[in-house]
Amino acid sequence: MHSGVLTSVVMLLDSKERRTYPMSYFCTVTTEIKWVTLEELDIITVSYHIEPSMHGASSTKIKVLRLRLKDKHAKFLRDLAGEVNFVWNYCNELQITMFNREHRFLSGYDFAKFTRGATKEGLHLHSQTVQAIAEEYAERRRQFRKVRLSWRKSTGNRRSLGWIPFKKTAIQAAHGQVKFAGRWLSLWDSYGLQAYPIRAGNICEDARGRWYLNACVAVPAAELRSSARRDVGIDLGLQDLVATSDGEKVSAPQFYRGLEPKLAIAQRAGKKDRVRAIHAKISNRRKDSLHQFSTRLVRGYDTIFVGNVNASALAKTPHAKSVLDAGWSAFRTMLRYKCDFAGATFAEVDEAFSTQTCSACDARSGPKGIAGLGIRAWKCSECGAVHDRNVNAAKNMLAAGRRRLAEGIPACLGHGRTSK
Ligand SMILES: [Zn+2]
Image 1 (tube, helix red, strand yellow):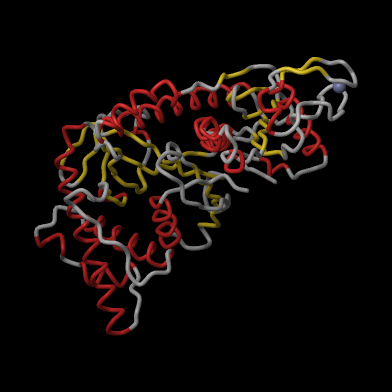
Image 2 (tube, rainbow, N blue to C red; image 1 turned 45 degrees about the vertical axis):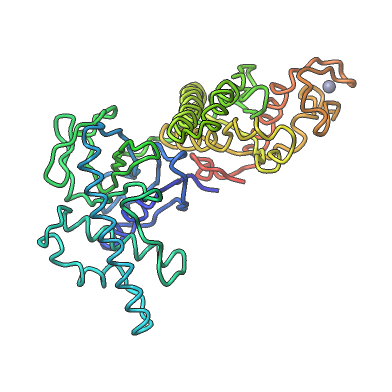
């Protein structure tokens, strides 16, 4: 339905921005916000529409840049994350007490009164960071409709993964480094961070103890490309991960299968770190190839139609592992936000009968049902056309998409947005 995909970071930013600017200046967030897994989070977009008369630019977008911090800072960051947990738990405790005593819920603003001066009492965190934690706590508590949230643990087996939110005053980027909590941190700056004003964000740890900076930055929105130039239909499949209506294919790389024996050995030996590393490797391989292909598609086409294949339904069939391997939803997410940034059009189309229908004569003469999943090529019994199963499906997707656009879906709906 929408294209913005966001994390807590931007929720925070969102609420902050709303408060900072007068309503006349700041119009509305034009995209719906949802939570995503860390997997999906790479570069994330949200469109902000700012009144042209009030502001020079017609529109800007918030983009989240994710950059890996160098491992030498791990201890420093872990210590800071410990302080974050301390503040979080303090908020939790305060909320519990307040609820027991007065049946009252505290807002981020309420917490500010209690946390004021905390940074002078030995915490190394920026006072704005303390405030960001309290706001996040209040927001989450409200969102999950709970009296209290879980405690964040700094030590032991069930240690919470490090998370340090910040606001724009608490961070500074220069010469390929960022200054945070009084220290310059080195990172792999693949975006040239300095060029962007950082609005807010967080620093967080993954399951392997690697640290990342997620920085929200504002960039001007791309002009919408003409949707008349080149369009393509895309079929997401099992044997072929992706097939396009132009006949281009990416064979489903069996990321998981290649590493399965190694994974089994590591699991039997109870080597948790090794298991974690293999899982990370699988996910990285998949992500890399999906990124490369989606970028290439968005460069090559102005309008992209993708089937609305339902991965969770297919996951119940014997092909389950391949379905989960394929990462269709991650791929769609990438296409969607990349289209959004490049001004290309992304649309999901109903993929019912796309495999069974002959793209040449429209007869439903193709392979049917789950048994038909294994068939790669077939001949239409009506017109005699020979089809590659997935390319044929992609052609049907393209036709369905074109039909839909011709039926007059408003242009604005198509812009980087899924319209159903
Ligand atoms: Zn036919």
